[in-house]
Image 1 (cartoon, rainbow, N blue to C red):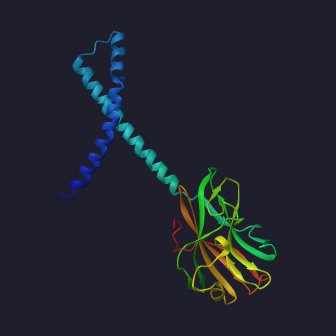
Image 2: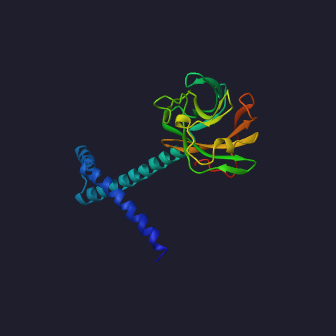
Image 3: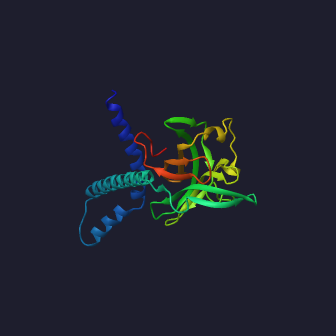
Length: 249
């Protein structure tokens, strides 16, 4: 009985799909119109033969339309699973800016761009974790990060156009006292472990950032933050994907 169950399910699903197409085909009277055309050219089609022909045509057409519907669903799913976003670093990845009117800040950013010609809606970025020497220093929750400029209304939700590049604020360093901030809204850090404690040592830190958008899989970027203890000795890069990481998030 268990081996027959999948067959019954498949047949029942096909029947429901075919029924809708069947009603469209028969209701449109296309088959009957075809028989009328044959009769008008002198072919005398017996009623039984015409009924059987109409039935066969309707079944064949309904089956074709069912197959076409499933093919379109498969193509749509395959398209949604194709990578459409990429993360890199470029000349926009390290930038100077004035904050709060008189504070000189260094912004370290990654840059998001599109791999397709289609517009990508509702792109968002999240801080996932911070590591050093394979030790996790923070992974409490996913925190939103801002697209640059962080003060814009669309800083948390961006439309990605083909050919454009969109920087995401990752780490911010204040020149005066070398204080560190993450690229969160308002540059706040709502956690017990302070950024001073997390980045207390010089060295290489791995910051994981997830970027998501409508109709495409999320990507998780492993960002290398080089911290030498001050704003003159810091840098940012994007590492190759980890073999154990899930690119779809």
